Image (cartoon, rainbow, N blue to C red; front, side):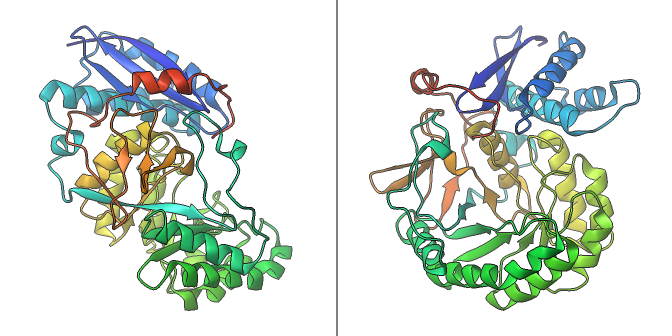
Length: 394
């Protein structure tokens, strides 16, 4: 079996998908995308296509190395790694289909049959939009004032009505020292989310790269409410800043959504700074590299919560890896992919023939179809494509 061509699909609201075609009639799906930078990644996919046509797609590891080493010694970087990641997903999809096995079986088998999923929570009631519609274009059923009570009500709705059993709050204090004045208000809102979610629900928090001094103060204020983890408590440019923040607390620290490849994760882990690894399967190197990152983390007692703010293709690839990883923690997903119908929460409706369904305990089942375990909903995609595509994520 040989690769014959790459086909790029621009799918509303903002996704970029890849179909890798072979001379055996088997195609593989991947998501080579970088938020708000789609065109450079598409160009890199086309550059790599010249290396891949004529290759055996089931030689996934060898082809990963071929792509990574290409470029006259220029390795890594978000554009190249995002292109490589999407191609890698498609290769695993082909390899699994050729073998008649889901990817998690190709990796060595499943450690679990279902995967726990978390959803973002903020100060507005959750809502959903039609497949293909930008999430920002939809409106919550009822607007809420920016108060702690609003955060409490939003958390209650996601748990009691939508069925999630793990949430993640988002706060953006900003990168400057003046943000220290926001610490008390953020802690008040997180405490309200904790109360609204209830004692049996895990709640993590993303504080979006503040100044390290602000991060320390904010983590100290959040610690009494027992966050599952605190995400990105430092500027991403310096791993030593992560070490500094982590050394000041016993709260679990998470990071890695904008790190490419295994090397920076190794640097963070060898200092004992990370409890939760968050590589993005569409940026960090695909299934191949994220599996290696997870293995490095396992040796440092770190668990994995793959970053996934993209389409149902990246989510499906993440679920396959989650099923296999012994040190899996919880899986992120993008709320634009949610759909509510008949009292159930679906992920990927309109894109996938069999969308993921959240069960009563906040998990989704691991698909058993070959490859990534999914099939596209061609009729649904006709409706999706009625919406405009944009280069700005979601």
